[in-house]
Length: 170
Ligand code: RB5
Image (cartoon, rainbow, N blue to C red; front, top):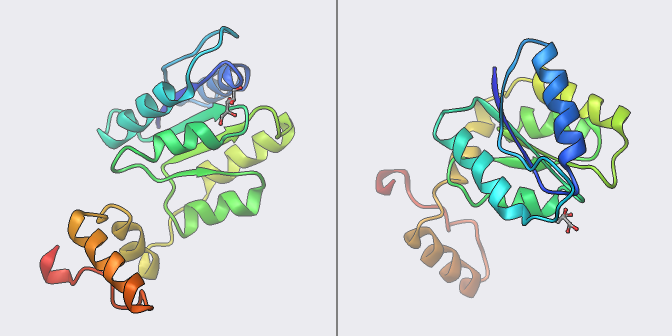
């Protein structure tokens, strides 16, 4: 697989270790940096990895920051990205099985390296289940103005059950 990697100054050491590991196991790596501890802004790295995955330049992405949260938020701004910040293996398995996560967000400050290796294994070894989960993951990219209006109306009405955009309008 071709894997896009990105990290800020609080995640670049894990990012570099992950790059080595992936290369050794036959993956191709697109490393968008950062490459040292000089403070940088995590959104730029999340966007770069997100765009690489959404455009098809990379099959999957991995982003790392101090907590995993900021860089995941940035990656998830890119339409086509389903980025999951994860902290334990079963959560990672579900991110693949149910949510078809195409970008994994990791925390260098909160997660030990051995656990990180387990999370990476789960990310690469777990397939998407599809089926009932497929139309839900599709809806993640249908948050249009029309959908927003429906959601706001549904909130006012007290029930979100009917807020979904009808299929013939998609
Ligand atoms: C950098 O200090 C830190 O805020 C960043 O790596 C990340 O944890 C943000 O979500």
